Amino acid sequence: MKMGKASNSSNGESSSNGTKVVLHVYDLTHINNYSYRFGLGIFHSGIEVHGKEYDFGAHEFPATGVFEVEPKNCPGFAYRCSISLGSINMSLTEFTTFIEKMASQYYGNSYHLISKNCNHFTDDVVHKLTSKHIPGWVNRLARLGSLFSCILPESLQATRVKKVEEVEDETDTPLPATATDSSKTNDKEEKKLLLSSKAGNSDINFVKEAQSECKEP
Image (cartoon, rainbow, N blue to C red; front, top):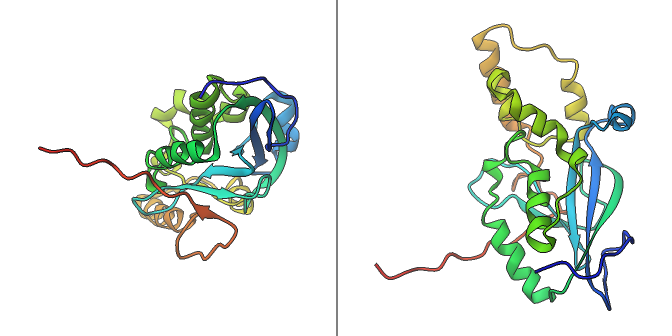
């Protein structure tokens, strides 16, 4: 699972040097066009291996939130750029086993904007495959948020992944003024999920989870 010969190409296909590992970064808001130059922004990321991109998103069920899409085409986000993170010598069968194990560790209802988001997932995958990490700027706001999590509203700390237009709408929304309003807001937050089995989104396929082994008592 260690990194092979590094590649500068953003193409995630296999080559004689191994299978390329490519990070695809997306914008969650158009504000990134201005904040990006300062090393800040709100980003989503997915990791491409063996010609498929793997992402992590939120839903309300105790099942994996890891899904696969066509590279650079994650629904609901605006593609920004690709970053090559080297190559690995791992067959498709071996990688399938690996990503299924990862899928069992990232449930949709465990998603947390600050502590367990899509960028944490891609960083974990990349580190396990190549011993590298994704660029710091991709998840910088989450790290900054963790420093101030004690003063962040609970509803913000638990926010699920949203589509681009939903994030932008919330940038102009004032904080709830009363406990009743806050409760209503939290209910709405739970319904604004990017990934739901009821959504009927044909552009994504959830990764099969690795089955846990039963041990004799």
